[in-house]
Image (tube, rainbow, N blue to C red; front, side):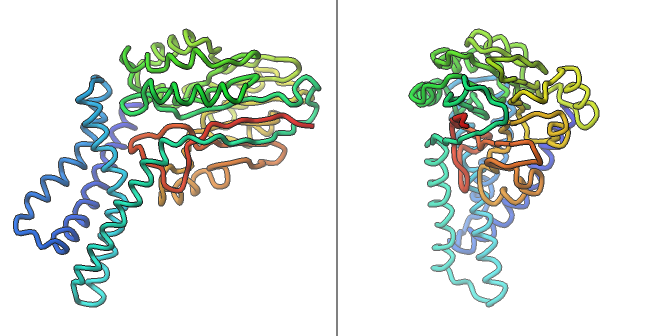
Length: 364
């Protein structure tokens, strides 16, 4: 089933790349009046199809060459979204007015350079998001306590040890009482070198404990290698488990075991959740919220969506997750926070979303 999903994803990406390249090629050749357009075809083909090759190669090999290859092609993949929109705009102008205003075309085609450049900077600029949380029946011991959440770090060919050291400093500066990692800590590359980039997370200080639940990207490589590293980092892995800390129930669901509807309800029933006691569910994806609410869970924290990562994909994300794409929202009696994550998948670009570390402070 995993290989089928990957194949479908690759075929869909290829279709989008081909369509985008045709539009970009037509606009670039018209604007710059190239006498040898074949060169443009080769460059566009290398950059665009190279991204898929870089992903597949990066799963097996991690070195300076594969990292540079992945970085260049993935950033282009993100930029190409805006080049496609700019190129399409220019071609529509030509069709509507029957002229080729090259000066205007040049101005239009430069817009993606500035937008993409801004997105690259924003992706690395992780911010602290502070959220106050009030849960019914919360014991006095938890009032004023701080929980810090990170998700979607995607340690791999782009986000490596130096980036992890940076976010660990930010986390420790918040002086968390408890620390949560909500999946996609790794990008799916399970080579020892890549996995060891996570080592700075050992230095996170949280007296009430450090807890981890898996995400979908931990299923793409050797999951057990990821889990072994997480344990060495001093984190407790929650695989469909519940534990109680000072009257607060902490529940963690493993991504690969998460089922929908009645299957998920059976997991919650087995956990014997006390509805009269506050509870926090750590779940990578903000889905199946009805079953979670019915289980009497107070608060769910998720990631996965990246808040669409870059415009205009927010329209697609909102169609799937609706108001739970990002931020703090209610699903009936259930409080849900969806984080935009710390890292990025694919293009290291954020436009219309931010990289965030989330601090929850429990209040009366």
